[in-house]
Image (cartoon, rainbow, N blue to C red):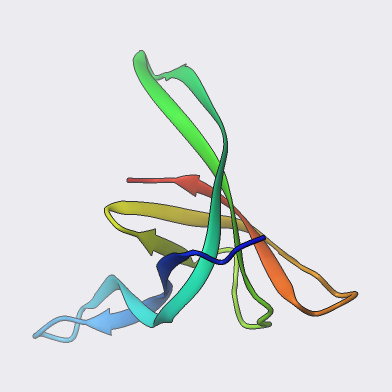
Length: 102
């Protein structure tokens, strides 16, 4: 499988504003080559409004630090990492089960 897309990996970071109050934010981990595959899309109705859920699988070179709370940016699309599935046999890649959040 070709790692032919450039993606940016972010982890949640605890930041503080000018007066010392905690602010949710993202800290960049780095820029990586990846394979991005859209798996399926589902339309549902939640709280009376139509919503769509798009699932994707993103493959990166093997790494052990990625967590399910992280996100991946590819162009204007942001993916929430829901599960991390490393290839423990060959240690060549890690697959990330993701959902498009924006």
